[in-house]
Structures are given as C-alpha cells and as structure tokens.
Image (spheres, rainbow, N blue to C red):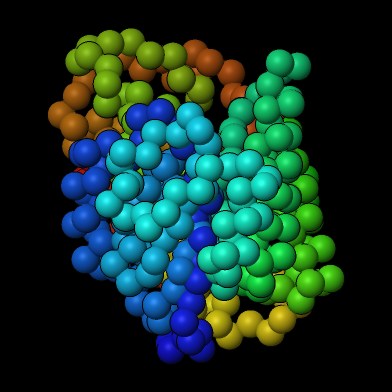
Length: 328
C-alpha cells in the first residue's frame, strides 16, 4: 500500500535501559534491517525508547529508509544505536521543544515507558513521571513543532477480563492515562494517532528479565518454582513487532485528521505458558526441575487473552511462536 507522505519527519525519543543496544544486538538488527519497512516514503523519525530492546531494533531497521532522531536521558547508553541515529536530543523541556521545532517532524513514534508488575510506594513517582509526564511533554513538543501523526504504544494489560478498560495494575493504568492524554491532541489539535497494543515480545539477544531468558540462563538440572502455567499468552517476535510499526506508518497516511485507532500485534491463537516452556526446553536440549504450582499466579493474572484487541489490518506475523523460539 502506497503511503501519502511527501518528505517525512519521524522523531525517535528514547529512554535508555542499561544493556540494550549491545554490539550483539546491532549484528542481529542489521540482518533484520534488510527486511526494512516498506510502504512509507522517506521521513525524519523520532522514537521514544530508542535504546530499549524493541526501540533499538526499530531504529536500526527504519534508518535504512528514514532519518531517525532520538531523545535520550543524560544517563542513556547510546553506543549501541549511534550508527542508526542522526541526532540525539537530551531530554529536558527546553531542548526538546527547541530541537523538535527546528526539525519539524511529521511523525512521532512513542515507545518509551517504565514497567513495574507490582508497584510500591517508592516507585509510584517514577512510574508517573516516565509514563505520564514524559509522554505528555513529548506529545506536546512534537505537536507544537507541527507533528500531526503519532504512533503510541499500549499494552493488553489495559483490558483485564476482556473489558474495554480495566487495568491489571498501576502500570497499565498509566498507559491508559497516556492514551487518554493523546486523545486531547487528536481532537483539539487535529492529529491522527495509532496505538499499538503489545503483548509479550521476544527475540535473539534479549537481556530483559523475561521468562524464556531466565530459563535459558539456568544450569541444566536446576530447580525453579513456577505458577501452574495454565495462563495463555501471545508471543510476538521482535522482527514482527518492527514490521507492525512499519505497517502503522502506512496506516497513518490513510487516516483523517482528528482520528485515533488502537490495534493489537498478536497471533490468532495464544499459547499456554506451560506448553511454551516445555517446547523451549526441548529446543534448547535442557532439563529443568520445574515445580509447577510452586508459585501463586500474580494478582489479576490474565489467564485467557484471546479476543483482546483487533489485529492490525494489513499486518501478518512472519513467525509463529513455534518458529520464533527456534531463533533464540
């Protein structure tokens, strides 16, 4: 599908996490970059979370066709993505507004965020600053600079019990709040926006504390306590996530000002966690002593995600979960 952009500006805004964007990650994203996003003409792009696992792969793919600008913290580790980014903008209100006004992006991709499965009194402020204050400043600075097209990132945890809105935890509530704030810019400033609903993600060289990564690091024969493993999950390979954001760029070109949509990046059918882990262990050739039921399910666990979210139209994942775990 042909995009309707002329000369595009997309800005990548990044909150960096230590350990992301390593040399090993660079090698893999360069390979995947050969399947670089199609369908949108050259743009200047800003992506928040550019140094995170998803963001680093996204900018490495997008830079083959677009100019990428990353907004970063002073503590961000940028070495892993320097080859993909035209300019780093240190996050403070004055510089963000000033540089975005000079760059005049047409598209903002917002990936950055802070996650806590269970919040404590000590991390509430960080959660709100990262997911609400930061998001609002970035939305406002981009729109003030003339940006009218935004890709936002949501989570399926916004829909506990498959309700339109029922947050699993405070993190999910902040993601919904950011989406609501975005609606102000959609309606009052006539922007168009796509929120991509993310489920569980994975891929090579992923050092996040995800269950498959934890299991891979365990010694053969180790014992681990798990929940009953009956919860079902959608797993999306990093390459498929990047192609989903590329498809969202195409979709934005077709949308009228003042409109917003939310779509999910997921397979048709979820997999039971226990099935996923048993297959992963078989592929890895590893034996573990797993104590199924040794840990309680988390509070407000989503046991059955089937039916949550409408799959992004025009996008199909390349990897099934069975094929994807073979790449790890």
